[in-house]
Image (cartoon, rainbow, N blue to C red; front, side):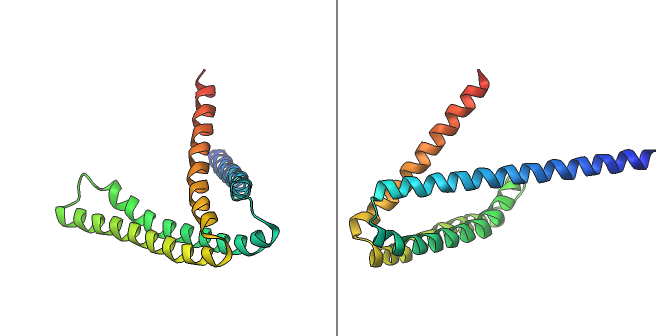
Length: 151
């Protein structure tokens, strides 16, 4: 009887995790779709520009996500031990944080040059502004949604 309860609990936990993962994936896809629409509208891309721009942007986004996932995981692990780490370890973590920011800046420089090959420079500037504006709008909507749940 105890084994059956344990198995049922295990199955329930696995199904709960799977459901949460699926919902997270749907939310991520929805946000990505909103971002694409937002950028498209803000940049006012011609069909020729869009055809050249989106493959470059998607590669940029993929490279940025890879960089963030590999670097941030290590940094977050280090930061979880911040209160007990030595000064030497803290210095290593600080250097990792600086290296991450430098790598992020290098990636941005590289792709700014790529974007300028497919878009006028003004639209490249508009792209980075649009990304920041989108983040700000998304955070605002999330805050509003959170406040609605608290009422």
